Length: 403
Image (cartoon, rainbow, N blue to C red):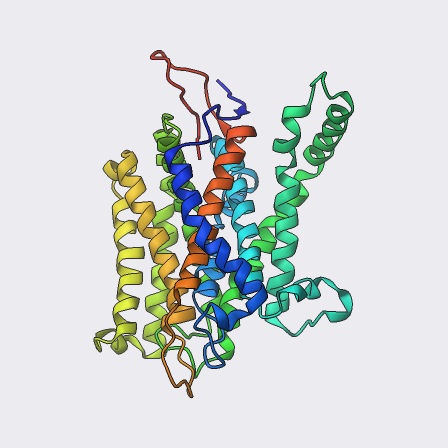
């Protein structure tokens, strides 16, 4: 039986929400102070280390973990796996919020944050810049995500007699989006592939500053494959976690079928990573016992090899706990990869000290993550995002394809 997305009628104010608000308050105060006092007042950045925690986690990791939007759209609408359609709108919302907060994080990190609009102005375009391509793709993709999410915003007002004009407007908007959505889906997948890979291209300019374990001419390809590899696990993680959070019954069957896609993609990624080391003659660096070698082994061991082997097991794929643990490992691996590339492996030749994030930088990152979770909870509480039944035989709310 098909189930339409509906708001989750749950009390918004909970102890968990209060905890998230408390976590967000210090970082929000730091953001306000930073906007007036500058980067040096709240960060440990300097001329040798112009980027740090905010770029590695808030931007690079955030973009990678928002890949569930374009991977789910490709699976459902391009490869025509309609059995996963219930996951599409929650994945879309996660990508929308993820990219929105990536933009906010980038604004905080920019020295002259008030100039963030410059890439959108034609006279300031620079076609030879990889960063320009990343910025344009992210702006265009974020616009695509908001357009695709319009039906969820309009749906509650369609047919409402209390607001007839608003209802007619929302009906018209919904009709236009439905007729043109395939164009936005294709554009979203193409734009995502472009900027996911180009984030790796950014580091190709620094072969003498990035550790040899991570610097490679195929870094853009590795960034793209890893983003695709984490797309499904992040959807599985969000689905299972939100089910627990809202007291709903997770649809383990549909997630189990979806998880079969993960091991082959992880296998391709692992083959490229290890093959690249062999071809470049850098495999011996894994045995030198240094901090970079240990970080690399943790990245490909815990974050790639272990979850790949786990998800090859039918027993693990049939278990919600097993899928959750495997998905967390993949998310950890991709997040660690971005941290390794942008922080651990990056060492300027004339640096006088080692970069370590300040408390202010950590507080801002915690705040952005907390506010993102709060926004997700608010939206699914009041807008039709998740598909669910009203009640089961025990009187509890159940779901279909929750994310």
